[in-house]
Image (cartoon, rainbow, N blue to C red; front, side, top):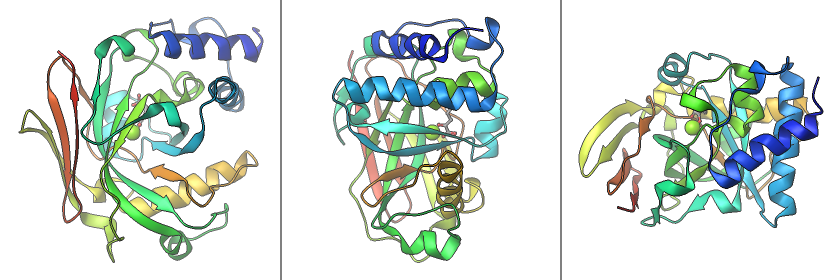
Length: 255
Ligand code: OOG
Ligand code: MG
């Protein structure tokens, strides 16, 4: 059994330097608790480099994502300041291993949420919503992993782009979303695909964090999970996500 700190170094270094590594589960047995401990250690390395914690991303909250990756347990990861790409900004593929994008609904909180919060409390804690694109990037070879591997790798968190914050809709549970490359739709879905209602993803994030003694805080951003399968990025494209009644968010990939 390798020390969890060594495994955290491994995933952190792979993410920081953009290279692929074998799955941790191919060299050692890990429990889910140990995987989250590795995630915590690796995020701590980012904080030690001066990054700020901005929020949480939820994973596998839609069937489309669970089927695509072959994992159907809900997971979370941490979002930090170095991951934020400005709306309309650009990225370079050399900073990633094999990045993919997925359209998401983001929430901004105006109060903390604990693990006992229900749907109404969670909705009331939402200050604003925004269309978002998550750029996921597994550090594992061929983008293949087991549940414990992906959790240890901060749930593939890599970058995210937020559109303009908007007042929350009365009902965010069935908003159409379109992911486009160079203006051509590549995935079409609905926020309904995210646990029937993205607010449920927020409730789940609060519950899962409370199980490890943490809490969602006011000012944090929650990415509620990809509503469609993720699509691989290629050089030189422009990527946009449009959410019904909430507008759009976009970025481009350098040629
Ligand atoms: C894991 C991250 C899943 C989502 O929105 O479902 C995720 C992965 O697919 O690599 O971010
Ligand atoms: Mg995601």
